[in-house]
Image 1 (cartoon, rainbow, N blue to C red):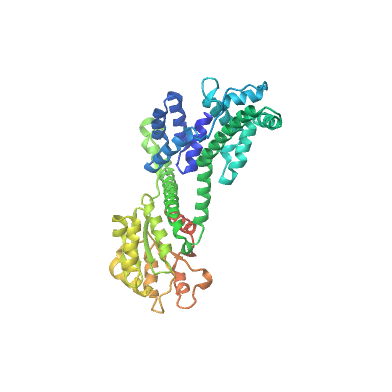
Image 2: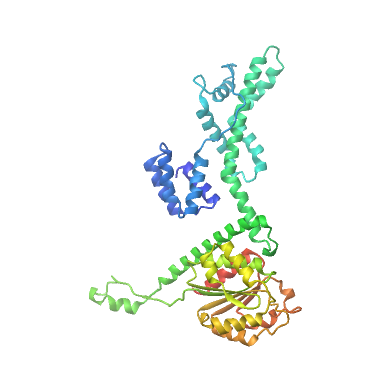
Length: 444
């Protein structure tokens, strides 16, 4: 494959676009037909074959302009009058640095710097602090040492001021262009890698201690994690639906073909579409965790056939409507304002669920409870919770408190635990992803 195209696909993936192997092969065929001459046409064509969604299309267009655009460096001055030193290596660099009809021009310098940068491994840049190192490596690969050596020599020579100025102008021009190139490659490969690292740190950080500045990064990260989770389970479902060959039915179906298996019959095991009921405590200590659980669930709409969401502090309410109709942040603000005030009462929440929404739970339903199990000493209504567990396929409880605090004070976690399929500490977005992955896995 063309190394330039391979680098572009790598840049797309680093920026978060999901460019698959088959799409990359299509892109290579597209490039073979169009070539690089018509950049606008190539941009449009690659956008069609490499971008799956509007988000991917936006990333593609930004990265195309950045990857195939020429780095721009602001020059205070450029090489002055034509100069010949008699040193072939120095004169070659002077020609590269001197634009206009008497020099090889900026195109040749850009090409030479690109080759030097590739030799120096500039695409491996990951942090802005590495820029100086890679600029030096690029200049060394370009062969700037003879020019710098002559400049140092001529500075000590009398009457060589004009030559020194010309050499300094050429050196500075080449340095600026090299720095611009390295900064461009950092924007393509390094900055996304840094952002990915920061996101990886954020998704493992306790949600209750999330800084406001990290919220947007986390929302983007959770949406991306949910898309990958949905795609993974959709792929598993397609594999499962292929079934096992039913030899008896296959022989019967092909009796008219002398037993030649023209038509294959398969045994299919009935598999339920995932149904999830989320019951969320939205009191102050749990609100941050609820936000990301619901964000995860509603981003999984393709993988979850039926999703019901309930929130409570004392009285339980169905909150699916706001989440489906309003922007997510507005919906969460409304839920916290209308449901989040009040003294927490888990027993009353089970009563409300039983009286008004019990039909939402059946043998196909996974019930996900998110809360700390603290209901200010009120009756936990274990009888209703036990009945709920008997109706549901699975009951998964996520608790933001560490297990060491379960059962302490007014916590009823240890009383609820015997009725749960699983009960685990949930502190981060990574914990939420693992739990939802396991919940969806139960339907395969």
